[in-house]
Amino acid sequence: MKNFLNISDFSSADLREIIDQAMQRKKNRDGFNKSSPDKDEPLKGKTMIMIFEKPSTRTRLSFDIAVKQLGGSTITLDPNNTHYGKGDETLRDTAKVMSEYADVIMLRTSSHKNLDEFASHLSIPLINGLSDLSHPCQIMSDIFTFEEVKGSIENKKISWLGDGNNNMSNSLIEASAKFNFKLTLGCPKKYSPGKKILTWAKKNNADLEIFTDPKKAAAGADCIMTDKWISMNDKVNQKQKKKILKSYQVNSKIMKLAKPDAIFMHCLPVGRNEEVTDEVIDGKRSVVWLQSLNRVHAQKSIINWCIG
Image (cartoon, rainbow, N blue to C red; front, side, top):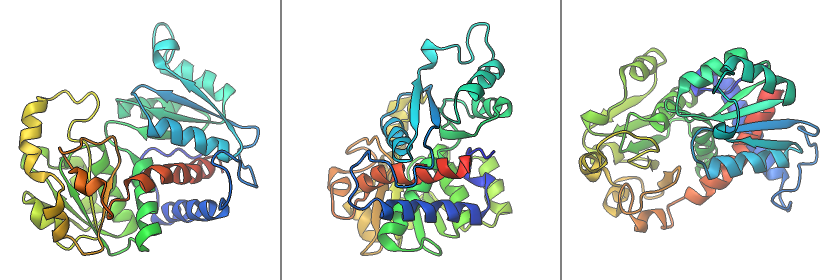
């Protein structure tokens, strides 16, 4: 049984296998309808339970379509309407019940601790659909998208601008070491990566540079990435945070500092004309809609790998 909770949990070889299989499955679907099952239907007769502690659009849709394309079925649970960790039922008991009903679980949670505790009691695989510490499925999809558009990500330069201390930047730092690409972060000191992830990055020889000047971070990049400045349940002074991050906006001036063929990525939802201008996100160098589509294909490979 294999869980998929953090990119740092896996070898480079395993992660490469997941990406390569996602690419092959996407190619094999040429001409298929969006929800038609793959020819081999590896999840036929199997069920994924999806639990959403936090609201979701892309994660909900992409996982549901991914399972359908693999030939399986999904059950979506709202914690407010179940005994998931509430009342007299512990997470341990809920995990043991769900292990009897399903073949794999996807959890989107506000607390990474919930993932770790839930996983410790399950006898079926658990996939991290998002937590406060990491967003591995999104980053795997982003790497897939980069390579589909520009070829191997190895030795390329990826620039991340904005909040350098969130789940996306954490998973991106982990990916930089596993996939061997150079990562530059442009972020204010107040929103620099935490000590734990920086210690991990150093130990694992990540090619990582952090700048407070966004222009230095963006210079010569093959891809510029950013994220919404105010995340869901982000308990901060939103006005103050936006003011601090204002100079880290991805706009046409920033994109000109990157390579001429550089692409722009954003995991969505987007704060238009906050972290990125309309001109960039709707421009020819933007691949954000392809990113959304590729969530399906990357997650299909992750699910299939977990179930084995």
